[in-house]
Figure 1 (cartoon, rainbow, N blue to C red):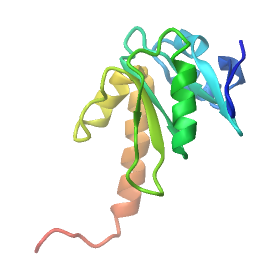
Figure 2 (cartoon, rainbow, N blue to C red):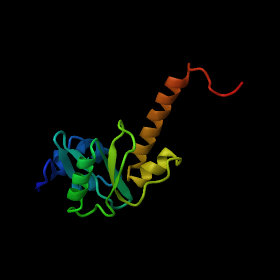
Figure 3 (tube, one colour):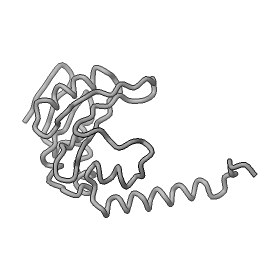
Figure 4 (spheres, rainbow, N blue to C red):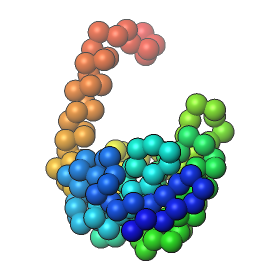
Length: 148
């Protein structure tokens, strides 16, 4: 499967640079196989469809034109419903193409996001453990910002 527009093309999921990363962490690894690699003048990255416990997904792009091309390409593939581009108001922040249900609100716990994006319980626990270790290591010796 190869679908092409001006600069963007879809490739088989296994051609994605991050295929193994996602396949190892999804509750349903077969979703990685059902995905596609989105190639935009560089490294192809995996777009994982919705299904099973996975309710939504997104991919980030540095330029609006790339996000628009990716949205158009993903619109030709089953498993990517309700495609939309979320524009970034900041020059140093990427635009995203989102699909499926809207993501949880930003204030939700990381585990809620992990379940929404279909990660396995083990992957969520590993992420939370790593984040806790990184957070405590960086804040252990930092001065407190709380009023005294």
